[in-house]
Length: 230
Image (cartoon, rainbow, N blue to C red; front, side, top):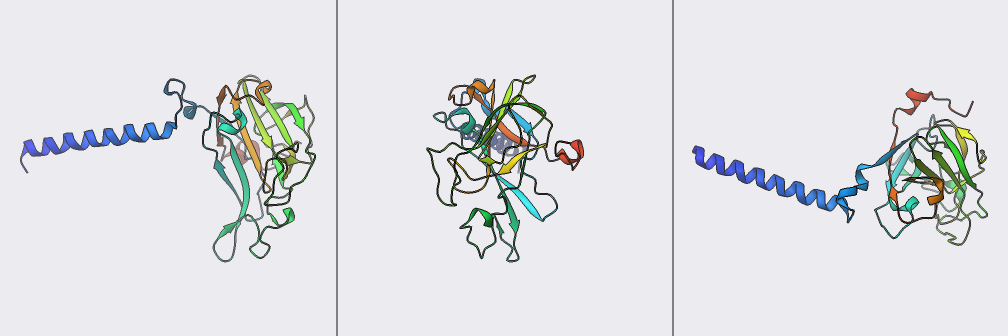
């Protein structure tokens, strides 16, 4: 291979790589304004559900960005507790139960923890309990709204029950604030977390800056394994 051929191949490779990068970036944006890229803005939180000591795992999935949804849903995350079963498959409930009852689910009524040091801005008590596989869009979901005033960030924990905090209370990272529930717009026991820039008054708003959720994998080392609000 002569030098000219090598240079041409190199230039072609660089151009092709650049094309892939451009296409990949455009695909990742999913229609967001590139000048105000929401995907580069995030909030760092304590793991929201306690799965310590019982061979359980905390799994999560992120909502795709949809501007027609409320801020708490546009880039929200759902957290579910699962366990690796003897058949080598990770499930949210033992295979013999089929998850027909809330009590079958590993996450049901497990401790829910605060995202960071914050003020509890609002508490929403649930008025119903769903059966797995069904939901009640008209029901009041359980929720806790946390405000980080110095950072101008608000975080919502939704579908919780047995809420242990009150409005105006200050919580620490990882403090137990309630239990995993299944209420409102939910089909199974889990915790939905949504976050946005701005104050809690934007709870039902659609316009604003939603934030991606990042989980602090070193929270136990930072705050200790026993952060039950003591």
